[in-house]
Image (cartoon, rainbow, N blue to C red; front, side):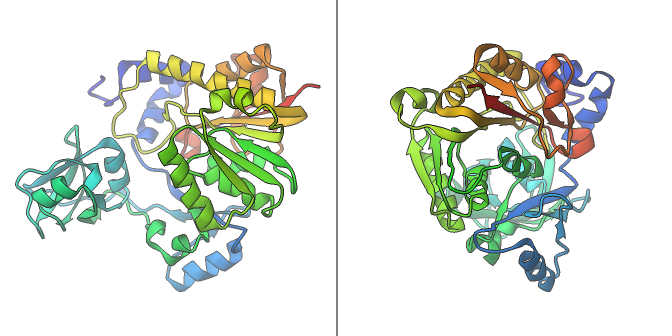
Length: 386
């Protein structure tokens, strides 16, 4: 672990390999949240214009993306100074990165809370001791550790401020879905058409799944697959809230979906597999090793194999990952081109930059860079050969 960056040596090597002289800029960008907080208007229930009006009446300045009409965003404010109190609450990495942007602290995310009382002023720190916010406790130590449920710290001061859409009526009614801009773009690059058959091999928590359903106007068939039953439950809650009636969820290991469901043939398939997530911002610290990155790349290739088997001849496969490593991006694409019946296609919606030109195929892929686009992300669009 490099104490200067709070990134593992392997992560720094990966960033150096990908970005060369720009690595320092990338590392600094990764430490801070994106400048914009994106969310998607759910076209099944509302329109972007209606949402903008609703939020404006509440005093929120919501802006529309100039190209993707359902993509909306709020500017993220900060950084701000926060008061530092003697009493500390230690939270896990995921919670800390959310709290850094103004989220409240809920009991499951707390790692340590010794001698904590109700209505106590506390500073929230990650498990490396980095302060991310301050607030007031709404539970004591016993309640936090016994029940592991509920609001534990109401955050009053954070480094950055983002309105919490998940606490709004619009979220509860399924009018909006918080989602990064590249993730919204990915479903548009898949370009699902009405009455088609679509398979999402890595569907939880349901962001792209519900977007695809909306783009199809609830026609045709969308199958969402995930082997984790809890994640399937989360996806089920998402599609119910957003009103997606053309979706079927399957709890199954998607790496064997083609073998266990041989009759399913799709017009289009989306592959958004687990990855090292090195493009998600902010990053307070990151321990990922080279071995883990290589294992993830091997894992990702298995899903692309299944996608190439279940999609019909001339059908479309879109691959996306929220990371920056060459091993999980350009190298996975090159492997797919060499081993599966897939060819790359140019992406009509090209709002990032071309992939790194280590392979001839890279110019047809699309990358988003943390220091340029406020996210690290990669997208490739394939067509299956006849």
